[in-house]
Length: 503
Image (cartoon, rainbow, N blue to C red):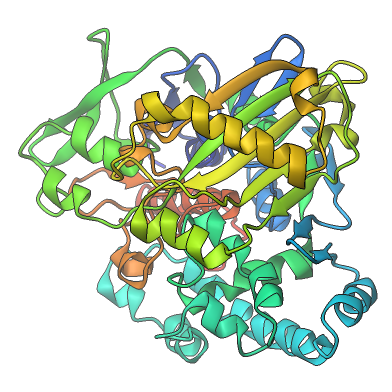
């Protein structure tokens, strides 16, 4: 670069941190603004009286992407955090059958033979077919889609026959398995996208595949430690991380972003701005009124959004004999999913997820105690649900379900700390409609049709995070940060090496 360029990054979530550390390594002067007192966004931690909880993500998939972005930042990820590969990956608990998926193929097939006789051939077919799909699709997820030409690429043409267009995720799994419960065992991953398996595009069958192929990891201290590690790398490369610094709005010259104005009135100018705020919130609150054309407030509201989540973070003075990750399926799972996504009501019979990480990680709670994380998919705030009225009743329903179905009969006697997040809580933290997983991943909101990393409506502005391409989930959010960093680097002639095959 002929001169040092200044970059503003708004939001220290995983996408903003990824972009910041890569750009700083490549010689840019980066300032990172975060409204909270710590980095991480939805990948931060809640710490209370000795208990530590991840706010959001608890599954680390596709660890190789995290390895790559640290390597591109000139660092080894293992110097910043400790990883444990979980085997089995998790437990799936139905009313009458239990499955504990593992990357150990022989052990997985043995479980299938026991619980779902005759399904081993389908599993072999699943691994082979989805491996081929993943190899074709992965390059498409790494593209920037800044133009229609970038969209209609050779990579996409190669991937098209593998996209299962017109088929849902549950439909694709029907190609491999006959048992409904076995299909569901490979489709619950659609919750990472905040979508119903009956509506989620079939191409996302690559999600269970990457788990079975590459495994699921825990980070000692919780996945929030990833954000802390990234922040440390940022500081080592000279990033000015400004916490407790909420951005009021972007500053503009016509439609070109020139910098940011903070809530306290300070203006900080830059050559480029990376926006890591929630997409819907940012479009409606961080851009002066009347500027946006493609993403007006009305158009933003009309988009399809993911479900939300009801969260319980429980500090308990006991360690329960439950796996690290357990998903409990409702008896009538289809009705439960329809209640969340179509009927938009609270189900009588719920599905829920419990992370009991303290059995593997003693750093999360005092000795002999546990930090339990409980997630329940629920409708987002477009539903007519009064959470002030329903929170306590719904919380009691979930704790009762834990007593009966998670075999925690004495849980109420051991709760020492309790934190509750509802969809309203998420919305109050600047998440559009409280849609925890951001924009839905329907076909009309994917790749070139999803908000692009080089933002279409504003100049000198780049988007990262779950609401932009490639989508929600930690690995794809890291990829969004890398895509944005690469585009800015190329624009300004910064020399860099990247594992991203699309550079």
